[in-house]
Image 1: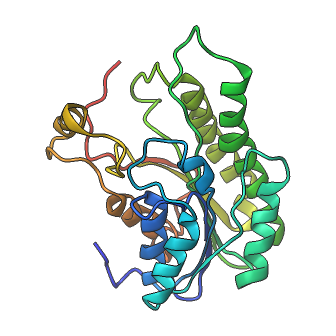
Image 2: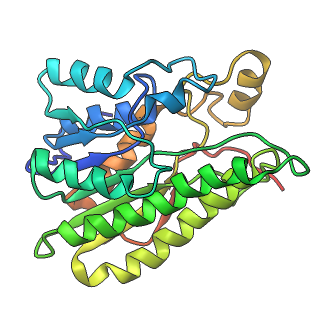
Length: 265
């Protein structure tokens, strides 16, 4: 879209889950910085390198930040860290404030997930997903609140998935964590409303970020009325809107930006 009428001039925004140049996080950083925001990005490329994502690269967060800053955008990378480790989430907020000043925007795009069917669950499989997707998000929201200038508009955007619209039985631990993120959105939006902090949640649907191929890719494309996958650009359009003044009356919402994907129970 690259709608020049939506501006974020003067905004200072932290985006997590930025570690793959093809990913949603990198596109979010680019789009919001193009709109005038100063952006800090956090990621953990070591996790990506254990997945099958085509776009996974070592030192991905630094690579994305360098590419964007070299093109003239205000984007800085934060120290890479694993949000599964207690205390790291708070440190990310602290470092972001040290780099660019008081934040008025927080986009929690980070995630941990694994495909393990019921019958094969272990604590070692479940705990990292819950710690990264839920605990880290809660602690980052709390730290963001503590540093926010509550005399002006602030915005937090969380990310869920399609588990509330269709079964995803090979990823139940991930689904449980993303259902909790939706609850976190609604509860935090109420708790933070009098502090001028809006909280919303995006379900980006199936995004083509380099993890699905062949017949599976075509099958997912056919589930969209348009016949195509969603793109990180589609998701970034919505995030840009939610962090702009156009969305100043929107909070506590879970928004499916999924192109009319045909779900089914």
